[in-house]
Amino acid sequence: MAILNWKATKSDNDLAVDIADRAERLLARIPDAPKIERRDIMMDILAVHLNDHRLDLEGLLYADDGNFGHDVFGIVRHLDRETGKLQDCFVPRYARGKHGITRVRGSNERPESYL
Image (cartoon, rainbow, N blue to C red; front, side, top):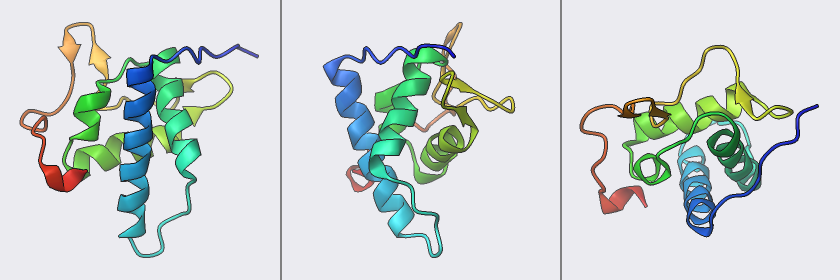
């Protein structure tokens, strides 16, 4: 069993908390959505960020609902919690690639309504 890296910066940790808060609010607006604990979302985001794909956490936080939901709930669904690696070829749109951020064009705006 791999030992996961949990050495997040304060900034990364704060962003992961904000992402989990937003995900929880988004789930509350969806009828019959599965119950996912805020803590679990935060830990899944940090596990991927620190052990598999570096994420643009600030960009993800301010992403539109579609891109935000794709990444956050895709991470929750596809994360191997023993290794911190994503499975099933899932790659978040806000993963940092070899050439920078792989996010969707135009999705880096910061409307206040998303927070």
